[in-house]
Image: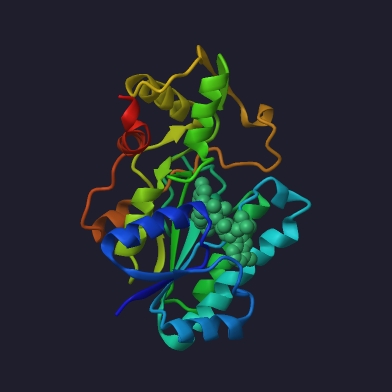
Length: 289
Ligand SMILES: NC(=O)c1ccc[n+]([C@@H]2O[C@H](COP(=O)([O-])OP(=O)(O)OC[C@H]3O[C@@H](n4cnc5c(N)ncnc54)[C@H](OP(=O)(O)O)[C@@H]3O)[C@@H](O)[C@H]2O)c1
């Protein structure tokens, strides 16, 4: 019998994973800070009490700009220290651990998509803390899986797509960053991948196929808004540089992840980012057609 433990209950990816597990009829429990994830004893007691077979670590400090200065310690704690605690517990019970990592472990200077074995060189505290957590986890328990994903959006808002739509509904001019390219990825696909990769180990990359700058993404969103009769007032989408965006933390200029490895394991074809975005619109704006 399988029983999953999702270490975040209220997080965005957690929401879509819960929906996916519900649809498969898979048993799971979720927690949101009521278990001290820094305490090996608490984690072990929870695993034992609930007969957990798979842990999915979705708990993370995600405030990327705050992590640069005032919340640096919090970021290192949540992203760096929780994964090895979970790894020790998972190792001791010989159960599966799936940890969610990020494309921000890379500096974004590679022209081609990043492969799993490429050298990591994070350029902001968030990425450094996530890389540390991933490394420590795999040192403790090489059978764990670190699944690197990127630019997520899904049912829970706000997300990168819903934020662009809201801006397009309020503003005639919307700015979108041109020098930040990745693979916008739909949580529904990530949730499916997490379940299908639950028994894998090491590092794997999973994103929707293809690549887009934030500017490309905004243009595709505008196109789909028109197609799905989502009322918008935007007249112009203007490209801007990261440096004019108000971001504090640097984002990688190009952090496209290669899915070559994961495609050989999964028994389904990963949708392109455009296909996935269309599915998101169908799910959310279907009534307006
Ligand atoms: N969103 C993206 O674009 C993206 C891209 C690449 C990778 N990822 C990775 O995907 C995973 C899921 O992200 P998400 O988009 O679902 O982010 P999210 O919505 O911010 O979820 C993260 C959750 O972790 C919780 N959390 C933080 N510290 C915790 C602690 N000490 N103990 C227990 N829970 C804690 C947060 O609670 P509070 O909000 O109350 O602190 C939040 O509910 C993360 O590992 C993230 O690094 C996300």
